[in-house]
Image (cartoon, rainbow, N blue to C red; front, side, top):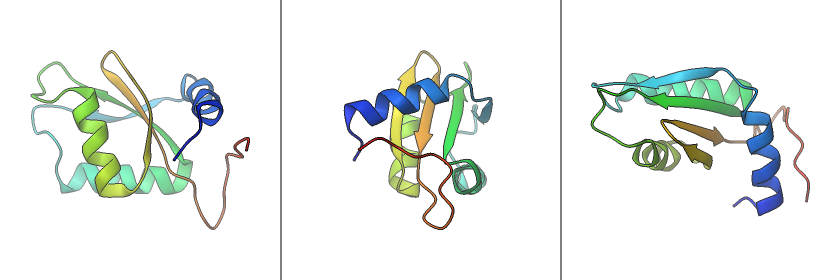
Length: 97
């Protein structure tokens, strides 16, 4: 569980990230979950976008991915969402306590 200071720190970092996850009319499938898992392991902070032709909202997508991957939803704004999961072996982002 993230504190409000940690969430603010991650939001600031997430604004600079490129959007690498795209959820379209296919919704959430095994391939998207695998892609998100690999990206979280490599980057720890991932930004995604829900396309207009999707039947899901960004909050719904973030909640499903967080449950499936054990990550935290940092932010959902507009059509975008930001996810965070620390890498236990090689952490790249150091959060304030």
